[in-house]
Structures are given as structure tokens and as C-alpha cells.
Length: 507
Ligand code: ADP
Ligand code: MG
Image 1 (cartoon, rainbow, N blue to C red):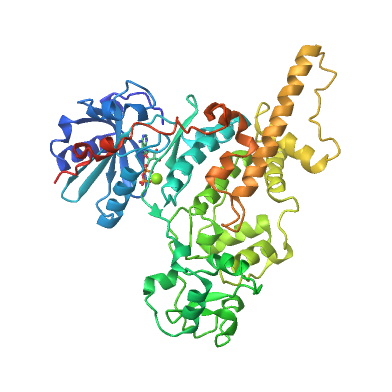
Image 2 (cartoon, rainbow, N blue to C red):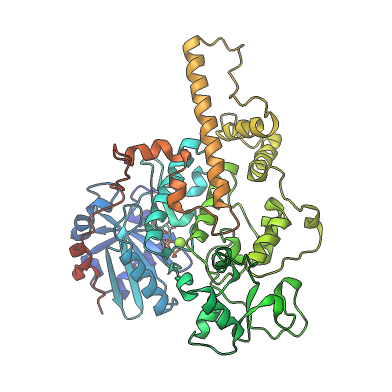
């Protein structure tokens, strides 16, 4: 929302009232911040643009502000209905995250009774809806690169964001810059591996009927998907056991009372229900979240990056629209086929059954995501919803060539009927080659984001190293090939971070 500053009369009366209420709820705030407009509303908060009257924040966090010299901040009013734990979690994580120019830092926080506001730099940005259909491949590259750079930083701190989606990644088209906001659902990733220190420990544990020092909470965090490495390094070449939690105990599925989660549910179910954090936004949840994996990692954010990238390439938003998790899995089935989903379910110790039409689609789209995007674009081309100059035709052309004209790997030359001189023809060919290669590598990134197995899914760091981002990485590499990450790191010296006068939450 890069709104021009509105005159007070242009602001709807109900918003003006809300702003007056905020002044009332946080007495004294008017000496530091002048509310200008309401700029956002999420599930848990309202966000206002405000002027930093004293200039203290804008000076201290100057390197975070996109428009140097601007003194606008965003005040995020967290709804009083949010639990104190949730509010603490969000503020604390924002505080830890100070240090990257692509992650919004917590500049200040205020609390009076149950009313809490977080102060962040104000980032002028465009709404995703306004540009997702028109972003050329170079723009898509920059958008995803900025997002992955932000995630690389967040993940390096061991934090899962959990709610990666366009409204939480503010992107400015003109500057080509993006910033990650909203750590309301974020959490630290557990160290699952150290919880199961060795196969022996695990076997002893699974085969005895006592808690052996593990807490009940730990039981819920076991998922067969984290056991694979233990077993794959095993010299006896054993197959990994199916594991689940039964009456609070971790058990091997294939030898305990014939109980097998992969075979559907008996009528009088006595087992503990599989529990896992499912926080996030529908349509952006990774399959392991949908399948209630108890060992979720930062890779769930990478899946969500894939969903955004799919929207940008397929020119469709929102991409997935199902109302619940079961529906979401069926949506994935239509793309990837039920065989993939069944394999994925087995990874998490579950079965996967569905009746009806999808069973005739065992393998999904024959050429995977490329064909799926082609299908989306083709439908629009047929009904003529893209304007003549749409950049979607570049993607469509690439896919047509890739999927249906495999013999000519070379990008097609311009039509000779257009009397083009040799220089123009050369330039055009060069341009087309670049667009073709960008698309080729972009689809590789897409496929890696949608790897069903979280352990095989690439990390943000890995994706940034793929050829798709070569031209952007070149600027950030030293001559000897070492990445400086210089532009990621902003003034975040220990002293800065410990300066409590900025972060003090007033009573
Ligand atoms: P919620 O937790 O309620 O989803 P967010 O932190 O995601 O709240 O903010 C909601 C919206 O407010 C965002 O989608 C964005 O449009 C706007 N917003 C949030 N922070 C800023 C900021 N620092 N600068 C500009 N706009 C912001
Ligand atoms: Mg949000």
C-alpha cells in the first residue's frame, strides 16, 4: 500500500474513531507518534501508519528504512484477545530477528494494561493482488530472492515463520525490495535429532512400557519421518519401522497389536489423537503440516514460498482455496497424484485413502508442475483473459516449447516477416534466450519447493545458490567467491540490541 498521505477528512470516520481510541488506550503515545492512517488489518492486529515525532526511532534504525530520511513508522496494535503468551512470543521473536534488512525489526513496544503495540519501520509496498499477474520473470526472480534471503536469515536463527504468504512479505516494486513481517505464529524449531540420540535409545524406549525420562510432550513430537536417518545408517540394513504414539507410548506400528495407522480407523478408536502445530494459513500449508507431523522444520516455510511462486507463474491467486486440511490434500492430489501423497503419508506413519474421482489420477499431471502451470495459462489463453501484451505469454511460450515442442530446444526466432534488422534480431534472440533460461531455472526452484519429503526439500540457502539467482548473487559475492551477506546485516551490534530504552515495555 503506497498510499499518498491522506488528509484527515479523507479518512473514514470509523477509522478516525479507532485512531482516537488508540490515543486514549495508550496515554502519552501522542507525544511520540502521530497517527496518520490505518494501513492494514490481519487476524490478530490492526496496523497504522504514524509519524515518529521525536525522530528517535528513525534515527536509531535508519538503515532499516527504505526511504532514508523518512520518519514514518508502523504501529501494530495487537488485539487484546490475543493470549499474553502469543504476544510475548511475537515481540520476543521480532526482537531476536533484529539484524537483517529483509526482516522488520521491533523498534519499540508499548503496553498499557492489556493493550500492546509494536513499533516497526514503515515499509511502502504494493499489494500482491495488484501485480501478481503482471510481474515479468526478472521481477519474479527478485521477489523470490528477497523472500529467500529473509528466510535464510530467519532459519539461521532456528526459527520457523509458519505463515509465509504475500500479506506477510511486503514488496516494493520500484525499489525491488522486500521485507518479512508478522512473527505472530513463528516458533523455534525443536532439535528432534537430539531427542532421539541413538537407535538403541530409541529401540529401548519404544519396546518398554515406561516413560524413561521423556515427557508426554516429547511423545507427541516423534514422527516416523525423523527416524529415517537413524535407520538408513544402520549396517543391518533394516527397513525403517512405522512409528506412532499409542496410549502415550511410542510404538512400532508393524508389530504392536496389529494397530496400523496406514489401514484406516477402527470404529472404537482408543489411540491418542495425533497432535501437531497446524498454525498457518490455508492454501500455504506444507503436506507435513496437513498430515500433523510432529517434527516440523523450517522447510514448511519453503513449501509456502513454492505456493507464492506458483501463483506468480500461473497468474492465479489464491492458488489453493480449500476450506479444510482434507480438501487441501485432495487439491495436492490433483497436481501430484495420489501415489505421491500416499508415499508422503507413509513417511509420517499414516495411510492415505480417498474415494471418488481422484483415484484415476495416480500420478497427477504427467509433466508435473510445468504441465499444471501450462494448463492454468492455457485455459486463460483460450478464453482470452490475458491482455495482448501480458508477460504471461512468455511463460506460456516457454512451457509450450518445453512440453510440446521438445525437439527445438533453442528459443524460437522472431517471425522473419517482421522486417527486423540484424542487430534487432540478435538482441531479440539474446533476450528470448535469457527469458527461456530464467524460466527453465525458475521451474527447477519451484519443483524443489514442492518436494514432498521435507528432508529432501531444499533450504532457503540451497535455493539461493541455484542458477536461477546467479545474476543477483553476483553482486553479493566477493571476488574469491565468498558471500558477504553484507546487505543483509544492518546495524545490530550487541550494544544496540541491548539498549533497553528502545525495547522497554512500559507499564
Ligand atoms: P497480522 O498478524 O494481524 O496478520 P501483520 O503484521 O501481518 O498483522 O500486518 C497486517 C498488514 O499490515 C500487512 O499485511 C501489511 O499490509 C500491513 N503492515 C504490517 N506491518 C507493516 C509495516 N511495517 N509497514 C507497512 N505496512 C505494514
Ligand atoms: Mg499477517
